[in-house]
Amino acid sequence: MAKSLFRALVALSFLAPLWLNAAPRVITLSPANTELAFAAGITPVGVSSYSDYPPQAQKIGQVSTWQGMNLERIVALKPDLVIAWRGGNAERQVDQLASLGIKVMWVDATSIETNCQCVTSTGPLESATG
Image 1 (tube, one colour):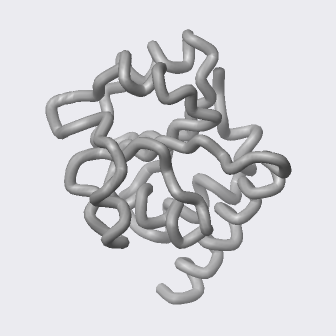
Image 2: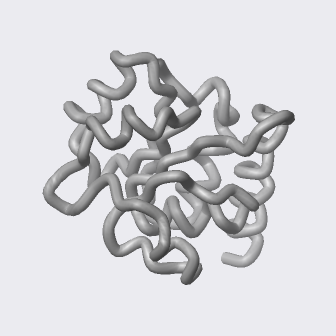
């Protein structure tokens, strides 16, 4: 498990070079994705409800709940990337974001291993759509 977590952190760290001059504007749509982003050194600009770890995640504006996401708020935050959870985010809403030109990376958060596979199998740029 520690090996898988290490691979996920290494994979997410590849997001950093995408934004050399500015901090990446990442939105996470699940608590697990919020934790992975922080572990990779990325502070999201928007998070889902129940994103409470690390503690500073609680101070970030919420853009989604278990009932759905606030598309207007997400668009207003001008994200570079939205990290969506395949098991918990409505595909229809996430597709709307992609249709607006927002890059989306789907993560199947059934285990740490599948998170690693999702991020490392195609790389951050190739797994983003939009």
